[in-house]
Amino acid sequence: MKSAKSLVWVALFFLYSTRLFAWNYTNQELGFSVTLPDRLPDFSMETRVKSLVSRGNLDASKGPVEMIIIQDLGGPIGREDLSKKADKPQNVTLEKTGWKSFQIDLFRVVENIRSVPFVTLNAQVPLKPHAIQLTVSGPVSDEDKLRTELQTVLASVNGRTNWLTDEERRARPTTNWLAVMAGLLILITGRLRISRHYGLAGAGARIAGLFILVLGLALNRALVAAVMFLQSFGVNIPMINTLEGVIILITLDCVLIWGALVLLVKQYGNAYQKEAKETASSVQGAVQPPKLPRLIAQCHMCMAPIPPEQQATARTCPTCGADLSRAR
Image (cartoon, rainbow, N blue to C red; front, side, top):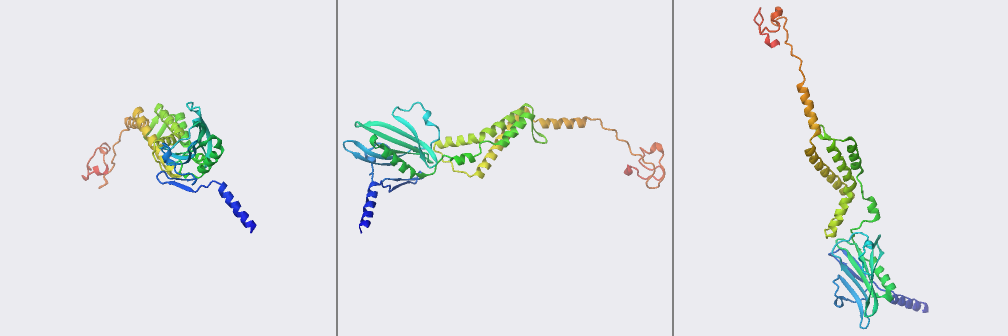
């Protein structure tokens, strides 16, 4: 009996000393969910910060004891290194913290509120279509506890991200080696023949080879940069699988290369069409051998011999009058 009571007291003590995270917040519009501590009441009336969620406690003499705020950043965020920016305020320190398999930005801000050192930890989570900022604030003396709470809330954030994992980055093709090799070959030979009578030679072909080479090196990177640029303006671009990506890349390659060839042929001329015309002209201009008349030695009707002087010109048989023109 005593052992059962001891277990009950231990369980109650454990529950009392452990922070409970039982309030689940779900945002259908932005497509994410997060679990927050249920012990913090709504704090939206006490702060002017525009937010999705605002929870906290306020001490009348000391000010805010602890706050947890979630804000919509209005669009996706990229992976640029913000530590290299030189315009950060003196009271702001940039750190990194973990979310899923990513290292995300964590801004530590220290300021005085009613003569009490106050620390704010802002973690920016790269969700799509909009990133969010998770803020945990409180006295500097409670920073260790605040960091633990931030990590607990951060670990519960669930939603789609516009960032690629390391595995996805390695799997994504960055260079079209087929286009690179074709461009190098065209540059070396100076010839690009699309069909029997269509293509480029010389300067036009080498310009086309250089264009194909650069396209093979830069097209995939340019597409990724373009997608990130559009997402920075809030454009929601759906995820595509590997097969769809390959089809899109091949189609775009063909359209760009064919468009460049048409412009280059227009500028430099169709080298192989000229070659075909020159060959045809030389054949037509060659001396044709004379056509010799057919000699008829005898009549096909009466079998009478035709005089030698009439064998090339006679129209009728001198003996029976048969028509000899059909036999020529």
